[in-house]
Amino acid sequence: MAYGERFGGPRRSGPREMHKATCADCGKECEVPFQPTEGRPVYCRECWQKHRKY
Image (cartoon, rainbow, N blue to C red; front, side, top):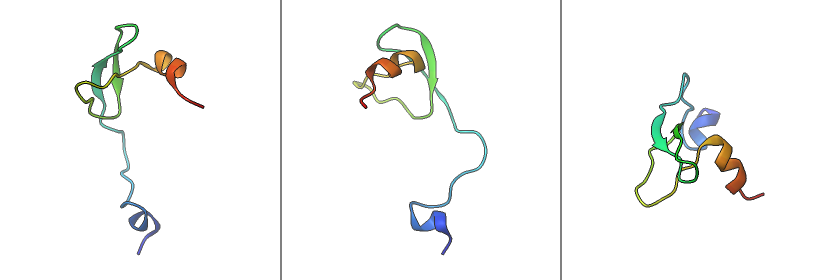
């Protein structure tokens, strides 16, 4: 068993699939590496820094 398979499967190589979104704070168009879910806020890189918990 390979290391990656033991912990959730092998890692993909290559670029991540990005999804277009609108920042819930500033309204700026951005791209995120996950499929946005309706009803949950999405933040651009700059606004996310303000909201992240340490």
